[in-house]
Image (cartoon, rainbow, N blue to C red):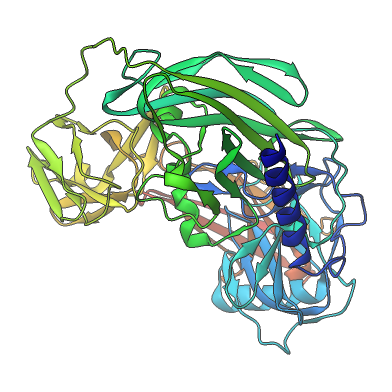
Length: 562
């Protein structure tokens, strides 16, 4: 017990040291309300780690967003998805803060952005102002919180980045106070054997192991009989005060074997280009089957994450006959609340043979070789290192369906799926695209076209279908009627929608001059600020043309007076 006490003391000191590496209380709360989190740094998201903290805005938009510290606006991005409207402020202390999902910018920033949007005739825009263009004073209001981009509810996404290295750092290491006295929760344990001479409970296949909650800080697993090389993975999440329904990510996971620290990772910092390796941190095939994310306490060869602080023998365990291991896996949040999962493992060399699925197929993809396969009118091309290891895949072509293995393998790179369209009519060629089925829906896959083929670059495996879209998108529910006097209106809005492939672009004019219409995809709505209309007191002609991703178009025209 003395040895494990020293280890726990060391880890506690490490957390404290991690906090002291960064300036404390140098950055202010970007909002005027207490910080209550909807999302923590490093949470497990689809194909990436969450790169900041999500601060609740009391379920409303329009909260004042202050700069965390004086500096200058170094980047502005307006996007339909992702962070939506986002600001990047660079500070003199070597860090850059990021504010995402904003409703609108402060007046001076809004004017700067709008001038560039009119110049480029584009709502979506990315700008890199000079150091002197938009200086920001201490505590200055730079924006108002919102729900733009890929957000599903009003909140402020907040990041802190190292300006020089571009690495993202956990903002809660900078002295921010968040009330949290609730320890993490364990939801499951999974044990995986590796190799023909390895087994879990006498069976050479991975399996979930029953766990039982003893109290808020302790869980105990059923005893595991094992032999050979094995790995453990856990399903866990954290809870925070004042946000009881949010399942947040934990800060760290460690594994002790007979009082020795074997494995430890934490989410202090990471780089964007390594975020994709989240699919090697989690048991990806099991996630795709069951939609449960188990985090491994072992490190696969191709995993290049920098979050690992300790990994003796990469975290794998080798169990021999009559061995007895006392395992403790500890999940902690950044407030140092912790929960322990105790796992007894006993060495038992008995293995019950089972009939294993034959994974060999005619389609073998060496990891380090560019590989091409063709079937019928289809073709797939895998660049070097598309997969994380040598892989046999399933590949089938039948009519309008192309199957490229099961969607249970993570990919490091995009591969190219091609369909040769010589047999299609001119009309079909114009409207054909790739789709993947999800439930009863077919989801558009970004499709490129050349004279005799269509192709897609994708990181997803599974079933692809040829679909056709010749239906024009819809324009509906304008906020005004033809010939209406809208002098009392502050804005003009209209709705657009495409039910198959989605809206590609739109172009709106008043009196044949381009106007800025803000697009809110979640509401299918375009909005024009009538303050942008210089001339008033006369009849104006409004025109709108929209296009979907297959080139189908729709137009709308109406007159109004202001």
